[in-house]
Image (cartoon, rainbow, N blue to C red; front, side, top):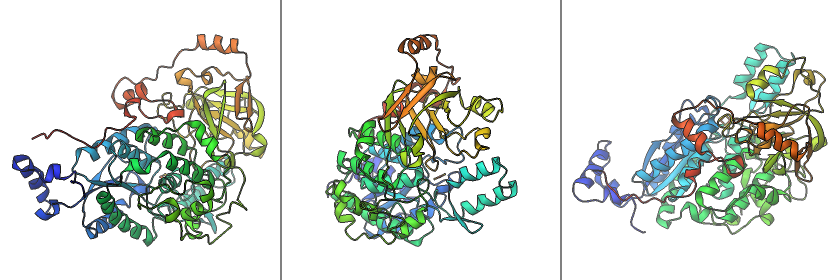
Length: 569
Ligand code: FES
């Protein structure tokens, strides 16, 4: 085993070594814990303000058990935690800040290997981005999904938030029933129980080769989650001995595998923005177009909400992600190395499918359309995305009149106005919800339909914005338009009444006005005053990049390694 990084602290002679060891001894650790044992940092996004991660202190104890057993020395530390449901104005505003916390906490401390504990949507990409910029031996443990919700004899999950809201808007359920549904939906520890962003992120981790098998789908409340935590603790100690770092696992092949797996599971559109940011941190070339090219021949195998019927709990019992990966092997880089030290193929050699209704096969997929389509045109020169499996097939080729909302407040003020000139053939356009414009790129792209359209029994319309969409949402929704309106993209000058042409099979999204008119309107356009003058938000606005490259801060891309040359004492 090469010299442990932690010995640059605990193995020192003289005053510095005295200080590093003495203050650790106040926790009751004997000297031999510091002598030659791999120190494993457990990077914990536990917080009671992140309900999906509220069980993580317990999970960390199971990780520690595994680390002790394998001869390591575990030390748990907190980092900024982002609770999707509580943080205002949007957790995405702080993803990059949380990644800085994770990066600096890992590098600055006497850590030889890391276990990352993430669950709720942004906690997973943020700490992985930070860890990539340090590049130590690192393994991920996800928190696991909630048990399936039960409401009046029916299975429910997070995607039902949208259904309950529309049913209440239409007067189909009472306020009392609406309240009851809340507790029925979130009835156990864990993150959202559908293939929303958190489950997508957990699958991303497993398909990149960054966790042990089954990490994505074991429910948080299932005792096998704790077993996995213990095994993860054991394994990271071995990874330190093998010096198996993130950069050896996160190769171009691993990213390609993950994109294909994401297509097969009908993963969230947020996968795109986070994977691009992760690739840029570790230094692997990845472009927006890769998501379309690599997923085009992958059918949808997982029949999971919001694209399908089942929940993450069903997915686990049906065989989970290993079963999908095994089925997809002919389309994957089978020899890509993972945290186990073994290949993707070898990790899933024992995997089986126990329910073909939940997990289809390549011969009999759940749907032929999957993945992410990347469209381009004068309305989105750098691209925009749509998830075909969650959209209405009849709307994939469509021309309609734009109904424009200048920002989310304008949308909220007018969407249900009976005088709004809109019908189901129109295209709802929402501006200024991009990375800079909101700021923070909230999940409002799947804006609800106008009441007068809903009243006709219509459940989908084309919607376009520079924002994101919740992984639990569905509809014919074009997202991540780049450049965004606040950066002067063509989206900024769309007016109500303009015609917009959509052609997903040909990957086109066009504003049907002349180039001269576009240029003329752009000359009249003035950048909005976003009103932030100080602090992190101003730093974010000044440095955030556009969605098509991952919306990271420009100065955070890349990797500074794990070396720290100076002692402070
Ligand atoms: Fe945390 Fe959905 S709100 S995962």
